Image (cartoon, rainbow, N blue to C red; front, side, top):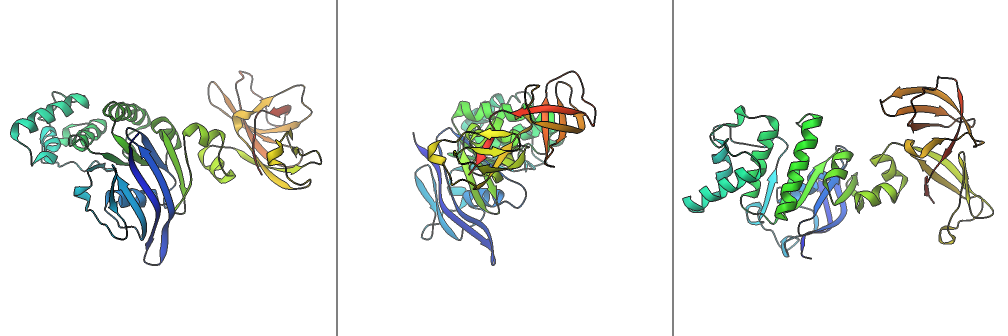
Length: 344
């Protein structure tokens, strides 16, 4: 496969404040990547550097096999064969839908412009809207106009900066799925920035968790969820509780919810302290268990109930239970945990 995007050891700073530190990632042709992180994590700065709107302090960027930015090379944004959709869509309010899409085609013939605009209108399901203005459209429709304008030049790389954040939850999921289908169908390599973990997991082939300017892990959604490299990553991408554990003489780990068997390659010295990450859905009610917990409170979620529990040792954790009966505060239940994540 062809590597469409590669960043190598990207560093960046504002004045003397470091904002990115040694960020390296890559995407193959047609793949979708996502930079996931809270505000100030550096994800938007990295996107702007890839777009050419910012200049890295150190490192190299390659798009479609061509170096576009390094210590010796600087290719301006308009010559990088990229397209970018901003958070506010940045549509021209005085131009119609067709003219907004046509705007990027100023150097092509009128016949080619007409053909390309019609193709994009069909692709983003806005045929019949070509004479409408942005203020006459819904947020989702405006987003699709912005996407059509971005894709009309067949870019090597599409960059999306929080493109769905202005939409309500239901519309956001619907539009995100439509956009994913479009870029996948066109095999357009795409990098999106978001702070929404569910959106990242649903949209992207690869997700990068960013914090304090560092790329903590770049992996598939399944790998991030099931094999996070650190407890910090596990806590960021999902709810859960970190419980203390200790390595036993036999090489297993004992923690408040039981014992975890460890493989030889992970064997630590007896007495070593470790962390065990337990997600709410991993905690189950188990009458045969000797581990007891007291119900503190609960949140009814329809098909499931989220319980807040307290262990005899004082640690608190949550349990997501599928059960029609509701446990009252103060009740004692027997619990166990399936497949917790161990951090040595």
